[in-house]
Image 1 (tube, rainbow, N blue to C red):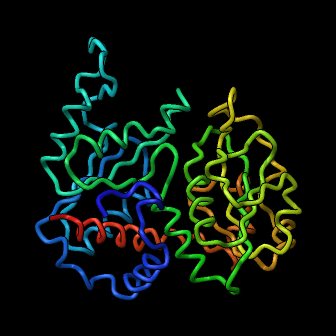
Image 2 (spheres, rainbow, N blue to C red):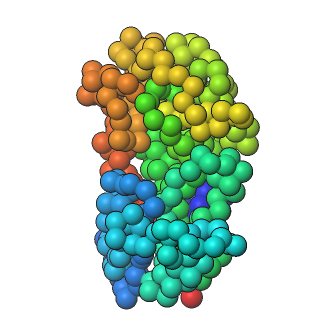
Length: 318
């Protein structure tokens, strides 16, 4: 593996799931693999679980870790060519990237969608600049359109908790006061489709995801109907994708909050969320604190997913 930005960089999903099981049981088995290697983690946006879990994963592999928060102490960066740099951005990213690459052996990048241009966001321009100009293996710690380390951890968690070979999984939109990217939802649908599980996406009209991600999933606008017989409920907010409303909050319908009444429609489903979660908007206190809430083990598996991917990238370094 040279880079990791999506499920398409994985040769075999079953293989990485098996490796995840091994890593979870033997977290320090490969502590010598990353000796004298340095991971540079670059954050253009906020992080808690991604920062801590990825750093822990790298340490479990024996790597040195440098963390750079672009918004805390680094120069503001210009990302476009041809711009006369007479504003408050003294550093150009086309110099910054190869310089950063010279200080490390691997780079993790986190950068959200900007919602200024759907075309620019969905081309993953910033992430691809790191791949093109750093000269080092690059992996996504969430980008504009996908969050693959999160969804890998989600699938690890589903494999651990499923009670049937083909569980029914529901991805439900839920209200949020801010415009959030489609990245988590896109990745989740992509990975669950690849696994072949029954997947239902439920949301109000106007919040349809890109067709390239929906794939074999069923779209159901009636949330109660979608929940019927479900084995897993994954709640997440995302903003509108379709033009002319790309990146906009169309409404905050609180009736879509996941509560005990809706969970009672399921097959005693487990509740999942990537965190952080806005209680009593996305999900009620009762549901997230219930025995069927697996958000904490789900978050803990972020170390496992990151460690599997970083190990694969280390093995690819010549």
